[in-house]
Amino acid sequence: MRMTDRRWSKMKYTSTRGEVTDVSFEEVLFSGYARDGGLFMPEEIPSLDLATLQTWSTHTYPQLVEEICSLFISSEDLPREDLSDLISRAFRRFRHKDVVELASLENGLNVLELWHGVTYAFKDLALSCVGQLLQYFLKKRKKQITIVVGTSGDTGSAAIESVRGVDNVNIIVLLPRGRCSPIQELQMTTVIEDNVHVFAVDGTSDELDEPIRNVFADTEFVKKHNIMSLNSINWARVMVQIAHHFYAYFHCSPSMKETPLPEVEIVVVTGAAGNVTAGYIAQTMGLPIRLVAAVNENDIIHRTIQNGDFSLADSIKPSLAPSIDIQEPYNMERIFWLLSGKDSVLIKTMMEEFQKMGKANVPEALSTKLSLAFNSSTVNDENVIETMLRCWKENQYLLCPHSAVAVSYHYQQMDLGTNSVPRCCLATAAAAKFPEAVLKAGLTPEIPPEIRALETMDTRCTVMKRGEDWEKILHIKIEEVNALRKS
Image 1 (cartoon, helix red, strand yellow):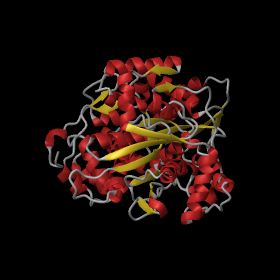
Image 2: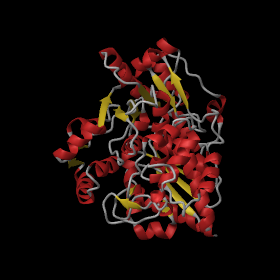
Image 3: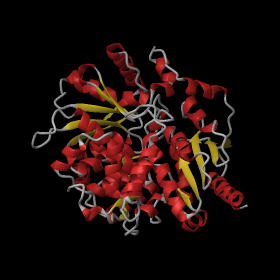
Image 4: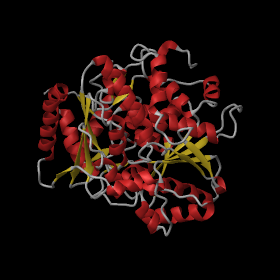
């Protein structure tokens, strides 16, 4: 497919569970779960030819985001000129001139820094774009929305920053009390804006997702209050993240002139599987990459890839990498759907079984396809500390504990002598956000002034205590902010 191909100018979307089809990008943007409980996906995935890949290989990161978005957003929904303008605005607050940066380190270690946005985490990349998309379509619609977000750490602050102070938007964020890093929590609770409402929940990130899922299941309530999500259940998040993988490939591939193009292995630290889903879509589009899903001891994705064990563990294990302390990786539904040949009946059966029983039977054929499409690795906190320390000794380069989960895989392969292809590890956050982990590694944190300032700022949040009806509290808050908005 060449970039001028018009087949994709009217891209439509469908639910992974098959009961909602022919949906526009605009409708998908302003949604959460589809009304059948599924996740929205493009009806077709564009296929890129060699000439297109070669042309894109010289693009900047913002240009790649624009090209990818233009394939998945109908030109009728968003003209190309308007798309270009909003992508430009989205990245204005990033600290690095190139938005992202590749660090080429010793022993073939390539680390793609995705954390140069306002909150020092990769979530800024997608959410800065999604925030601009929301404002564009809200201006057209002349309406207001309520965003409901559950976070394990980084999504909440990036979502808040994307819409803070915006007149026609209210955002409600649920964070797992005491399970984020102190800086992650402060990045949310110090935002004193009228349209920002933060709840600290006495539970895990998976537990706080339950009342959110139940709210979205009440379709009449969702429609009445114009409720949407900015978690990676929202397709727009995944769409922008596809660009990470193209940029990583183009900057790590030894040649763009060979036929076929050489492979590059991309190591993706993952929790809810949004970023690795973006990678699989990039692969499906024709990007010659191998994908490795790197996780900590909350290893449901690893178990599923290795042996088809798609089941919840007894509990979430708190770790030095709290943003991936997740046992319900809802974006696996998108991967299953693609690998199954878009078998919505199978996906509906599997995911309803998983929601009811905490486990689902992965058919052997699907399990085989999954293990062929992905590799995976799992590490514990000791491995994370060892990796952070090794990277510093070899490079004087500080890794955050999440990025160390990915880099640990690189060191494992290097020590085994299996570095057969170029490899890129996606760095999802700056080490500055996790000084406690840096100190545990015996290293010295480097804290930027804007992060240090959080410690002296006023905070505001409401506690959701264990035993309270979290879903009822959420309903009441949504009704309250909408009543205030109308008045």
